[in-house]
Image (cartoon, rainbow, N blue to C red):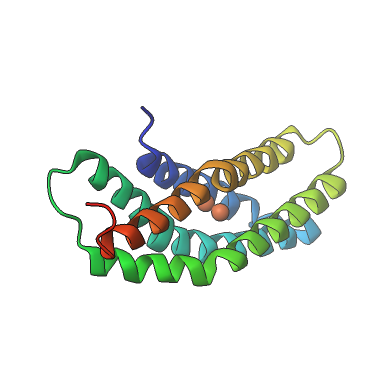
Length: 150
Ligand SMILES: [Fe+2]
Ligand SMILES: [Fe+2]
């Protein structure tokens, strides 16, 4: 089974490094990547503070070696709920900026297509798998707190 926590961490680091490199470009392309970098840096911090701990809660529940710290995870799940819509909006902003970069770079610039593709795959995986897993964690957590499940 893939460890989605270390996978997410690793992808964030790799994408951040590439974006930092592309943001150094001169002119409009550099400006677009600087914008993506600013959104992405802020965005990934909140994912690492909310989505990753909620995935860790699911993992702790599966293993059941120790009782999860419910108050801690409850605070995290409320932060995730508050940030969820913003995080989806940020994905859309990044998507639009990637499209601008591709349009500006033209069809020959394989690296820009690759980086945009990697960002899109990353966001799609989050929206289709990791955010729903974090929502499922919130659902389970509330039931565990209220004693419906143990
Ligand atoms: Fe992410
Ligand atoms: Fe994201």
